[in-house]
Image 1 (tube, rainbow, N blue to C red):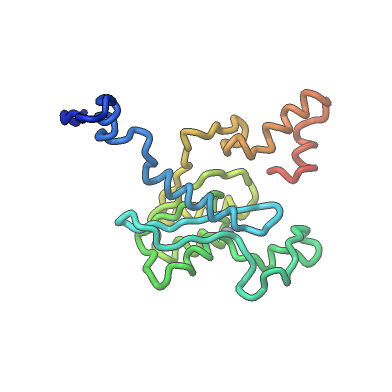
Image 2: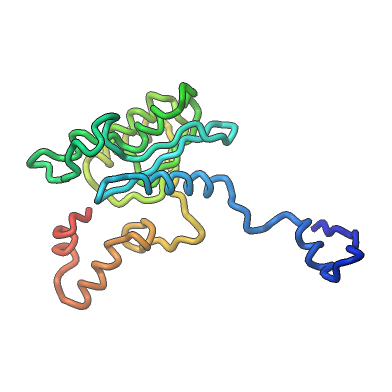
Length: 210
Ligand SMILES: [Zn+2]
């Protein structure tokens, strides 16, 4: 390691000045930074149930687009966030984070780019990622076993797009769903199961989990 050998005449804290000339060890590494940007974007979401953020990074490690799940332009606050598919519901209207990130690139090409997204892409977003020529998907959580996610995985695999679960050093992962522990309902439900004797499968149905 490189220490600054110059001593400060007026200041007794020689060691302190030496430390500051070294490269920081707790700097934010690139992939964590890009996922943090996606997580920050997710905070802009008005969806009461699911907040997703996406960040597109090109091969020069520059951010070219950021997005979160939101209603189409001009439709904000005019459409329902209800998720019940048997009536008028958000799924008919909402634009996913990946779509918005791709549309927010100000004309930059997404070919060869990496998609950082907080939730594994659905089948519709997988199509956009593939057709845009993106090379990889880095995701933070993947809790759904719904058909559209199975289809998404299938398409991304056949299109040779790498998918990587991003482990964050500061986040503990759930042993059940492999998602971040802090927002994992599964973990809480296991404790509820133990405390109440109500079966996990039953609880997970109530909470619409998996
Ligand atoms: Zn999607």
